[in-house]
Image (cartoon, rainbow, N blue to C red; front, side, top):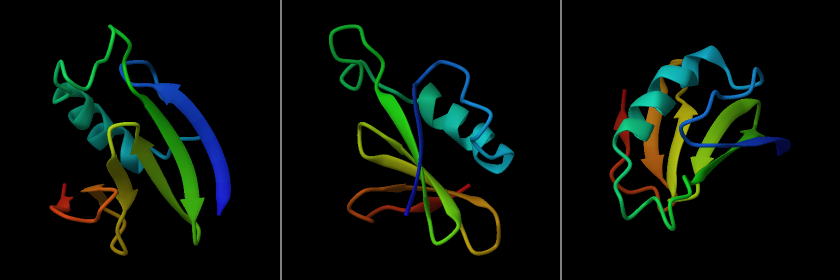
Length: 85
């Protein structure tokens, strides 16, 4: 695994975040609930690389990664309810 970077939801993702993930990350952020925003602070994203593929993980457990076909996939840490975007 190659370590990436961190940033807060709602802010501009760093340049190291692949373009293929950016639109889907923005869509996930639009669906953040008040419960996800604790004490007025937005949750953070962590970008890592696994087997050469980027994975953006939100502190809430939501992930955005690239599927084998190069399309962004929204999932959860536990792997349930994965949804291709």
